[in-house]
Image (cartoon, rainbow, N blue to C red; front, side, top):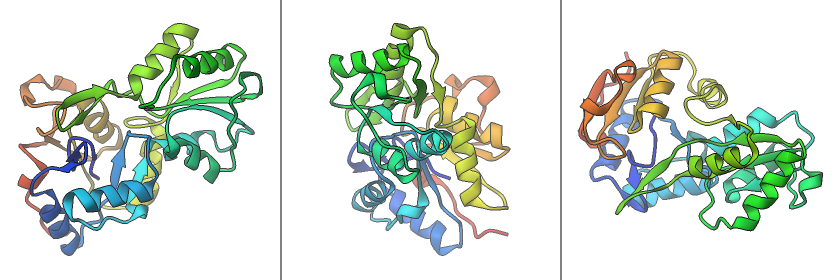
Amino acid sequence: MCDLDGVVYRGGRGVPGVGRVLEAAADAGVHILFATNNSTATPGRVAAKIASSTGFRARADQVVTSSIAAADLVRDEAGPALVVGEPGIERALAGVGIGVTDTPERAGLVVVGLDRRLTYDRLRLAAAAIFAGARFVATNTDASFPVEDGLWPGGGAIVAALERATGRDAEVAGKPNAPMREALERRLGPGRTAVVGDRPETDLALGIAAGWERVLVLTGVVDNPEAVPREMTPDVVVPSLADLTVRPPA
């Protein structure tokens, strides 16, 4: 189970050598899933980005996003949802029959993720819906995400603004929380599982919660394994996913 931002690619650029390792893993019979807290894109677009940046031909059904986890979490709600985010959230909600609205008084839900075109007015509408009693759901609370030239503010920065404004805590769907973990478990099936990630509080914490092996790579938000909290210590540390040795499943 591979994270994406900071593990497979940074921004639009693949981490060197990752495509070769993913191909070797697939050829060896390893079941590969990609799990991302980035809520902006649909699984199809994410799979296309993996292919274009690394050369590995990922399939949409190998990708689980925090938008999908959030949609699973609220699938029994009537909606509609006021969304702060990008198309990945609206498409995931549509997949469970939940429509969207821009009217705070109509919103049964507020679903918040990364929005790179965020405006103050959008925050205002979301806050108004939360004040009116809408259920407040965050796809994730990642403070940042890695791109080619460093770290950019993540969806968690937007969630934090609404939490501070409204005095309400969001329900969080993405890694390491139960909705994302359950979505992955349904797709993984039985057998030995390893999480490969760059962020201790999401990827490594997910591995701990699920009882999976944990592999930390240093191409994302952490470049010094000594900085990882003791309670989140990985089983393996490698400079890059490209340095991971793949063996066929037993």
